[in-house]
Length: 212
Image (cartoon, rainbow, N blue to C red; front, side, top):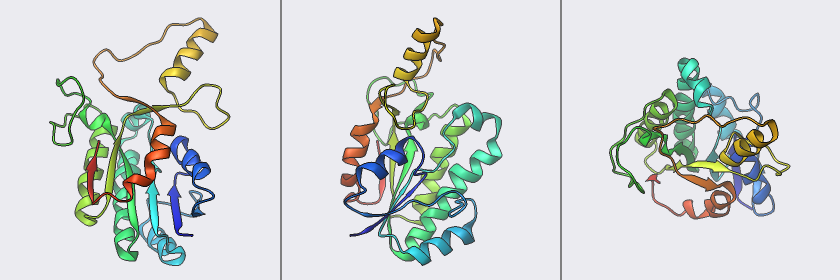
């Protein structure tokens, strides 16, 4: 079996990737203390010791409001952490797929499906940092694949970790008898997380670059 490292393996996407691919790969699922992406020496040491063939980099600060309030921490994890992973993957020859976001387009006036080369207009810290992470990671490791993922959801009854998504928010509002508050000028895609999980292997065959 090839070795597959999943960072952020206890998170919303990472936990589902780990479950789905557990019988096909030898999984490496480090905790934050075992692999702190903010520390370059720790990242390089882990990669050299365990020699993964594939790295799915899901670890991130994904709460946009938290990133807005803590921009330095967001940059340290979402930008610098991704760059450190990219460098280490290049060093050991591992294939890297890292998770970016469609929030790089968040303020664009263009409607409908967007292409990779369409105008970037992030309007928040998270979107700006994801865009910077793409650019810097690919400069350091041109064979990396960046996936601009949309807002992912799972059913509210899922026993796995849930994030704040459209179905969860609607269910919560129904249960509590409250209204839903949402941004009025935010245009994003919405995707069932299991579609992303099931198709993740296809990204391993893609040449380095950015994909919507």
